[in-house]
Amino acid sequence: MTDPVPGTVRYFCPLECGWHYDQPPPSLADMAGIVPASSAYLPEFISWMARQAMRRCAELVDQAAREHLATHTTEEFAQAIHDLRVRCENLARQQAQQTSPRDDLWESLGIDPDRVSREEFEEYMDVHDRKTRNRT
Image: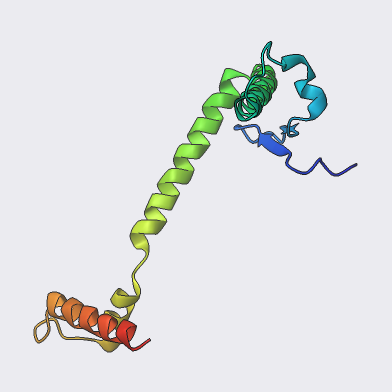
């Protein structure tokens, strides 16, 4: 197996079936058939060539992806959507359970909320953070 050409972009199947499509960057040979009739101004010509080459690459990727996705069943699409929803729910649940360093400090110091409110603690920590940043 050979290494892909530098600049190659690999596109994976969104259903995670293992399929991928490697799109190499445009080469001069690829651009041979897209030369415009007039090339009066070099920068405009170069920009035009680059746009045409990128459009052609996008068309090739689109065609390969459409052909591959046509091989999947409706059931596979439904399963992939379900799996993504479950992942999103799990990530949201994990994020909701995470605590900040200030939450951990509040808990570890065992601060009595009757003596110091959470707002006072946050204000003190903000001042402390500003002083610490100013020292560095």
